[in-house]
Image (tube, rainbow, N blue to C red):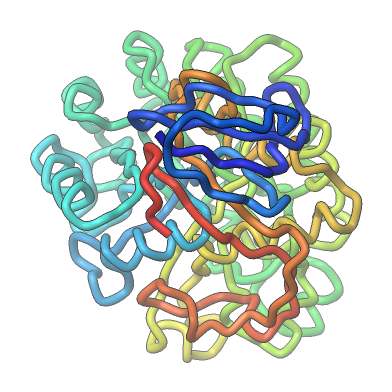
Length: 422
């Protein structure tokens, strides 16, 4: 038995923060007590010194380079970065080379993950074969092989009839479909969000309306089919009423947003810094604040890192030519602590979005601080200051937009099934 005592326990389900102790045995939480109880059962005692103890982060949308791009991120390096960042479960994307679109490739992926990572890995599979948007993948077989959701990652399914068929099938098997809500024709080639700043920079731009248009189409198809649907990233104020209306209608719809769209805005690319190039492009400050409020209100359900490793060669290019994406496994918690310290949300509210809600979405019993829940836990200091140094990140790729930034919040220990992995 392990007893974590003198901890400020974050319970995202009860929305409380209390001083207490957590008892762990056989990989699960068996008791939660207040520190008024001075004697503890025999076992290893860890004094948390008044720091915060919370459910581990469940990060939906992690890109791992295996197979095909191991030079960008391996299972080993992603697992180490996740553990150091308080991520106890990585929900991985299928945009590998080749795409994870058959049970055989999925089986290889799962075996590699089990052998090389200290954290839980739950794979998503491709929605269409080769992520080409023309033919549905073998959703039933992939579900049986362990796929927890289906997505073509950053490629929207352009043909509405094909997506309708996929959603109809997914509804029959209760499969979760995750979509990238950017209208592809409008978004093609765009690197920034349209507006005066984009014009000044002379970069190809896309209106946030592209997000709303795609979301409107998808909501109509969800209404038609009754499928379970998750929008991977809602990043603009103009799309929020569409999401709100869909939820009010009782559709099985949820939405996420990345740490980068919650903490950065379009002005961060002023010097054409390619580490700030992400998909969708960074939005205006008004959009950022609207999305932050949507998370606080519960309209947006999930926050993720959208961890997308890119090597130096793909980023050290002119802005238009550089690859999109940023690493985020290790920077997720300290970046989000900015929102807590600025008063936009409290810690229980934050952990609803990064632990409890992702677990609910995927039907997991994790993400909770409750008796019987898996002992996937993180101990962190919410106030510890540091300067981000990208070369200290454990990811193989170092493409973080937070390099050199003063940040607060450090993970001290990470436990997976009661075992300390960081």
